[in-house]
Length: 237
Image (cartoon, rainbow, N blue to C red; front, side, top):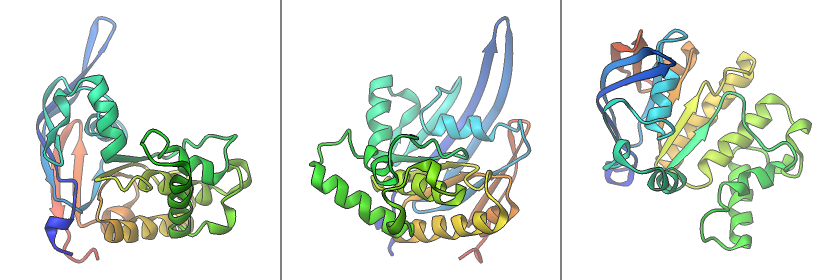
């Protein structure tokens, strides 16, 4: 597919972030610069405490940076108001978490539909789109099950479906295989990769998992809040 059909370029410039804890300033990120190309599949790696999750939260507009700018798909997220951010996140970003973050009292189908509820879409169309997305992640036969009736891998598939059902420009995943055994983790990785290729969304994945880093076409390593190395892997596909 041509690049003009891909979506979601990410550009981070001069990004610094400091947490204020009482009287103490705790600097976490010290001047981060990188670009993720539209439709890219990028891993953000580093040891615990290196600033990866903070960086992901800043890119997702969940936290405001202390300094620097974040641009997603040509829009500067770092200057948006809380209301603008809410709308921007809803329309452009899908989140996948390590702990799935599903609503326990809703079925898989209802959990995925929830992501579409704030738009103007009629109920029938919402349901149709959610069913189609659950088929894409291989869960058509578990649609009416609640999270407690699903395995970890199935719950993560529901959360992947929920993140992608809005056809977001950017998907931010925080340790998506962190709670899964290695076989299930591999399956989720293959699912993310195939959805990245089909839906052309840009993926940025925080991970400790070497397999994910190897499968990505761009890997960024953070250490103590700075990028220590970065490489593009042309054989990842």
